[in-house]
Amino acid sequence: MPLELDLPPFRCLESRPEVSISFEGRDLRVPEGISVAAALLLHGLPPGRRSAIGGAQRCAYCLIGQCFECTMTIDGVPYRQACMTTVEAGMTVERQVG
Image (spheres, rainbow, N blue to C red):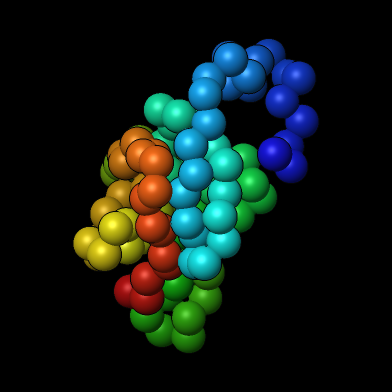
């Protein structure tokens, strides 16, 4: 994983088994049991939708399910909150517009 995991908040992730998810065609190995938003952040990828006006990248803002900036299409279902969805092996995640 790209982030340095030898920091206190991340040490608990080292002992977790990893699962594979697909993000826009890229296979990512992520710790089991974390949110989709956290998994993408670990890989340096912004978890969020694209703005309906202009297509600007949005990103998870609150990470507690209140702002809806992290809505993505997960396993073919649009408008799922990445911060409130736990990763599962084989999951497919894509950004959405709007």
